[in-house]
Image 1: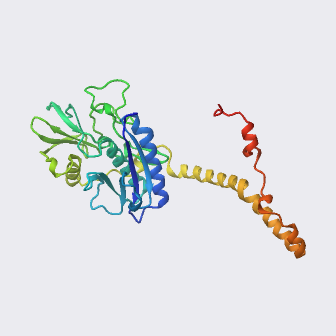
Image 2: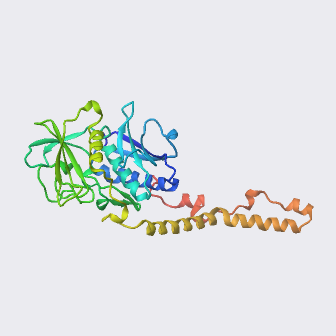
Image 3: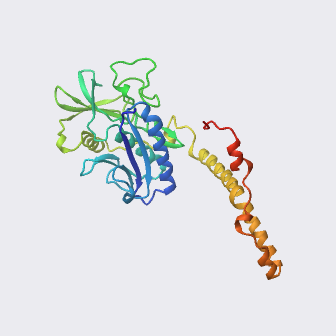
Length: 335
């Protein structure tokens, strides 16, 4: 992990429908997922920061851009004119819908920024031999039913590096939630794509309908037409006319609902505001108000003589915040 490069992503909204608070909440969840979950299974380090507009995004960051209309139903990762990755996500009606898509795009941008990373392994199709699978960690279990929540925000499941193992082994985690139970497994609503080296044709296993995955040949792809991922994404969305399944209600491992977590957060905010008021504002304001009332009752000369400097009316800090008591208390940081 010490040798992994730091990848910095920016979450930014160009949508009129996304509230700043929702954007910040999703950004915090994506940062936590990247730093806590993804790094366990992929050799990378990452940060995700929220910016108010594209004008504020530092040039070293790869942006995930939320928009009202990106021209088609699916999100995707693209390369700009300088070959730097960026992602477009449609701002759907509910936060848990676009947060799932943003998480999906974030993970794939981190693991394979340029959309051409492949791993050689056995083909998902039994009558083929060794193939090169395109690394798209979220695709096989991308449906909301396999998602989970971070800070009550819905995020995508993703496969681990063990997804490419030759055989199933006990105790191995093939995806973060455990929904994928064996190497190269595709779940309902998911798909996986690969290059058959013998024929030079691209293939795909999809499970968009029916009781089992189906296979289809995509044919040869030319790298000069863009990344393999962007070409396959266009073919996949155009042929199937599908979008990622709906939000948190469909998730099996979603955890606490957003309203229950929101109630706890509001209660904590009330508690903190009361403490802040007690520490800084309430008593001092009451002292100032009492001083003003007393001054009005006194003659002007005595008012002039009795006014104390503002600093002298400040309350002493509570004992646990007093500088002397803090210095005298033992600390694990004292040498």
